[in-house]
Each structure stands twice: as structure tokens, then as C-alpha cells.
Image 1: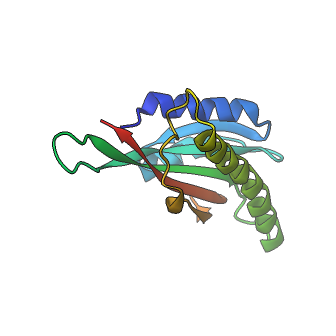
Image 2: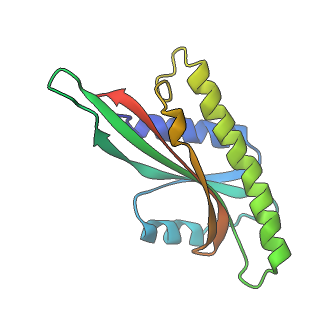
Image 3: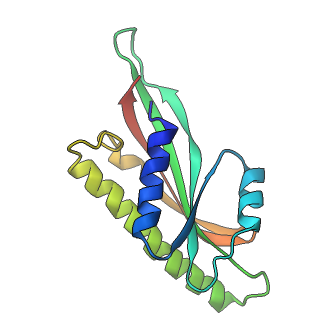
Length: 152
């Protein structure tokens, strides 16, 4: 089971490396998303990284096999003025897509060259999914979800 502390450390390190990522939010439910993003600026080209608490599922065949599936969700979003025109929203999708792509590339690189990094060593590469986040509590951007396996 991936520990939240390790995921948060990874996400904070990623934010510190990316000049356009303003803030990391760790959330467990929709009401927290709305609350946290209410107070964030995202002025200019700045955007936010959101880490949604993972879900876990058993991959145990018997008592000797103690594997867990870790279902991970990250979002790169930017606050969007509701009065902004369509072209402005498309520009936000373009900018947030570049940041999400950088996150995805980092995760895949860590998977390929895991060394001491055990967070993403056992990613199920077929589970990567990227979806738009459209007008969600006044934000637009992209969501990345995937699964990895760890021992309990």
C-alpha cells in the first residue's frame, strides 16, 4: 500500500521543480476541492497540482500474496473566470496539458529507472488515463489516473 506521506513528498517535490505550479492540494472529497481552490490565485500562467487521496484494492490471491492495488489521481488545474471566453478556456487547457504531460513523463521515467524509488516501480502501464477537468468548481485542466501495485 502506498503511503500518503510518500505520495505527498513526491508531489511537493514535483511542484518545487515546476515554476508554473503554484500550490499542491491534497484532498479527499469534492467539498475540500472547492474550499481550497477558493483561496488560491493562479494569477498569470500559474496553476495548481491536486493529489486526490488514493483508493486501494486487494490483489491477494491467498494469505501469502500480500499485494495491493493503488489507484492514484492527480489533477493539474487553473482557476478560470466564468466570464472568460471560449478561446481563453482553450488556452488554459493547452497550458495545463503541458504541465500534466511533464508529470506523466516524470512518473513513467521513474517507473523505467526506479532504482531506490519504489513509488512507481510496479505501475500497470495499461491503466494510464488522462481526462479533461472542465469547469469543475471554477477550474479547468486535466486529470491523470493510473494504478500501481505494492506489497502490503
